[in-house]
Image 1 (cartoon, rainbow, N blue to C red):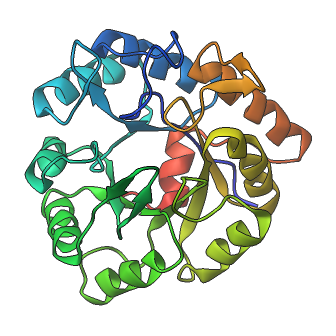
Image 2 (image 1 turned 90 degrees about the horizontal axis):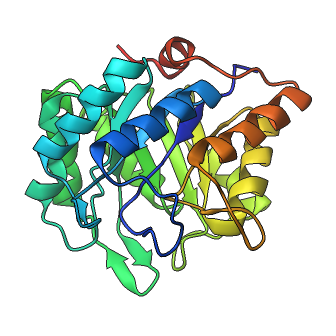
Length: 270
C-alpha cells in the first residue's frame, strides 16, 4: 500500500465554540492549529475561514492571511473549500480559488444536508471546475452520494478535471450516504481506475471509517469540521489530538504516514 495521507479539516462552516471551545477561529489560531496538526502527521489541510465573530466567510483576504501564516510554519498542502456555507453564491464560494492554492474541493452534486439542502447545480459545478483549471488548482472531488461519481466522470470527459484525481467520500451527513462498511467499499470500487481516495466520517463515524480506510489502502480526513469528540461524551482537545490517534493506529496496522511531499506524489499534484 501507498503511505497514508491524513487530511485535517480544522474549522468547517458549521461548528461553533459552543460545540467545542477548542475550535480555532482567527487566522492566527487556525494557522497554529494547522501547524500542530502537521507536526502530528497531517499532510493536507482542508481549509475554511471565519470572520471575527465566528461566522463563515469565503473572503479571499481572510484566506490569504491564514494561508500566509500557515506557509510561514510548514509545508502542508493547502486545500481551500469551495463549499463555503449553505446559502452562499457561486461567486462567493469560488473567490478564494483565485489565490491559486495547490488544491480546492469540488462537490459534484446536490444533497440534503441535515435540515437544509447543499445545492450544486450542474452548471455551477462546471463553473467551479473551469475556474479551478484556469487558476491551476488541483481539485479534490467531494462525494456525498454514489450518483455524484457519474457527474465527476462527465467532467473528466469534458476535460474540466484530470482523469486521475483525488476523491473524498463524505459519509454520515444526515440526508446523504450513510457511513457503513458496505457503502465505503461500494464508493471506493466505483471511482475511475488510477484515482486516489479518502474518507471523512461524520460524527461517531469518523473513527470506524478512518480505520477501514487504513486497512483498505485509502486515506483519511479528520477534524472539528466533521467531529468534535475524541470518544463518547469527551471533547477532543485539538485537531492534533484526533490525528495522533490515527497515526498510532496506522502504525499498528502497518501503514506509514505520508509527508506533504509524499502526498503530492501519491495524489499527482503538478
